[in-house]
Figure 1 (cartoon, rainbow, N blue to C red):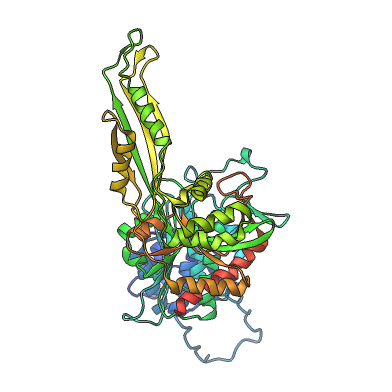
Figure 2 (cartoon, one colour; figure 1 turned 180 degrees about the horizontal axis):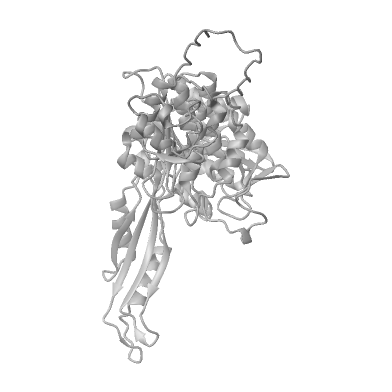
Length: 554
């Protein structure tokens, strides 16, 4: 657990100074931590039980002193033992004065009595904390949500903010179940708090102020993915408020640097804090959700597999020389010819349970040739005509096969010199049923030039294929039917990548599930004036609660 900034407001109640505090173990630490507190006179005679002191200390995180874990425990112990339940009043030996003493002001309501935040309030709070990599502060957002959980009565030990680098905090919350040591493993729910950059001059309004307008919420992260974060936080707070006890532990991890940055939170937690997030499987709202077309709900998608991302460096070296005496042996020509061959090459079609189900279940919702081609390719992956038409559309081409494409190019060192070096970056997105070593061998064969050196420079965590868990799919289908009767659930292959790739690589199957819908023709994630339908967000709040509690019972 990292340092917690807290303000111990007024708990030295009723004491004129440190000398009037009870002499007991921890007094010196308590006095040191509380030096400079103000307003103590407002809380004269204030006594609390140990859980109430813990809640009071833990929830006041907005300003004040810093306290480490050891001092936190010492102060809590001192307060609980010495300012615990109110002492019995002594019977006065003389009658009271004619004028009764002034009635002391009532103490502030404990945190547990505060009105719980609405999902919209959580959403607004998250949007208005800038969490970009350049100037934002992921830790601030993590601490803000941690305060919400402590307010709700979660023990401090079950609410941890872990910070590998400045501004890169990650929140991990655990709701304990009644399964015991021999019960089922936990379920992990993840979401990233960071967002992509957003410049005020590029937007129609401030991207870091939540704006409700014309049936939409606008703001950076409304769709990717602070709306989903808010639904998860709301679900965990609601379970605590309602006294819901799951059959297994439930874990929530809100993390940093999924979009970009040096400190990816899921990688950090898997590597350094596996015990905090180890689970039977995980739910990642970042890679699921519903589709809308022409204002109508089309389908609910559930991500069940991801492609792996691999970067290869292509390099050609040459002695070079003066450009007035050119040679046919030119580094640029070698590289260009190889890339031209790659451009014309397609990896073979590979259908497996996820992309086959995606095509099969999506086909009825696409009229004309597209829907017919989806059905045809499922029936016969070698149907040349259908394959040609589908491959002409980038989305479906990527769904059917592994792809490799040139993304960066560099060559030469002077305008009047023959190039001594030519390089290119080729990014491959590999199906979970394909082997990266086979992809590299195929790449060398297609380039067909021994002067082109191919080096694997960066591979995302390889995502082994995990069959779809029918119980998870069944629950998602049941909850979807409850909220949107008749809407089909379609398993989906993630063509890009999410944080789920690190969990799957660590042996934790991960499924993309979200109740937020996006318009097929108006997805503004990462773009100008990012937005989400207000109705969709509101519906997603109850949907996610049903998903979380449903998995908790199973």
